[in-house]
Image 1 (cartoon, helix red, strand yellow):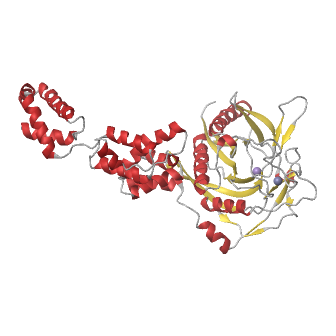
Image 2: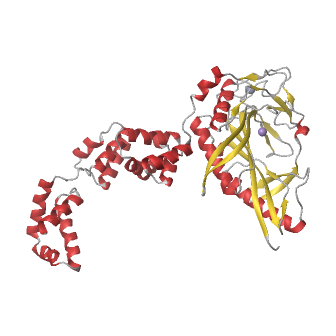
Length: 487
Ligand code: ZN
Ligand code: MN
């Protein structure tokens, strides 16, 4: 097709389920995998005459997330009805926010290969989730309304992402952020985050620019599906443009679904415009007005965000970007690390102990690092002993095992009681080295002769020292003494 260049444009709509105790407008508990229709009441069943009451916690969670996403928080916001005629929302409308969302004009910073990139956020608003239609049995459908009325934060970005990888980076960063803030568990398996990317291409051919029609891919609930569906759309839209030359016009936006098994997008429908939803203010709910007295205490709950933390760990502690990423992926892990450093552990050593040792133990047990029953002070003590060369790496592993098994174990005491402390005491080691030299005249001769045999002989002599100390000689100190004696 000759000289054809293209740029990918992706904007993202994300629904994040908030981890409130109860639903958005009634007192029903949030539910996952409970018996169908066991967490319902007249409000979320859409019974005539029932009245919704706003969940303040959900609004505060949404405000907190909006602040973390650098948004302006609205002083005045309201609730709107969005017409929706499906059995999974029996009121026949969804309570959402239309023209006055809770948060606007923010941005999120994401890590890319070319450094940090800012993705603009158009808006973040609150709404209720629908229930679930089930078409699994016979010649009829079932509906489970347990999920109906669950609070969702809908976040909409500008089309500032230029690859599937950037979109994935944003999704993962957002997951870390809402978890740090404690506003969502963001558990993908439980559908706590759902993505709808808007994808199109700007194609340049023979100096002329063409935009392909925008496709919205609906309801993706894994990072993999998100990334793969965008890559698929890029290829499909290129092919389509090459075949038909079709470009974006008013009204040729379309909606497609993702077939996980076949890894293709499938046309669902031509997109409805906003007026099809017939939004209008919900007369059953009062508008929400925010003021400083309410917002300041929420603002105080903001914490250092994961990406900032990660960059700081690299700069302040000299950790690799990879290690910093591992430690900051969850707030509890980062807090644990920082507490161990505060307790005197050298950062790099604490990091190694955590990532190479304790994280593995946690993975084996299927728990979080912080649920291992290990205290930051214990990790700091281990790090200190390693730094002072009081213990070897092997001894550190043995002590760590013991620490995992017993909560109040003092690593220093344990090392002493189990003869795990290295002999670094020059006086004591000197006598042992002396003995070894006396007992091995041939090796000493080979060592002194230099050349090829010399290194081997030194290794042998050191081996003898290790044997005599049952592996507890500090190898560095022992080697120094040997060098000095044989010089
Ligand atoms: Zn209810
Ligand atoms: Mn929505």
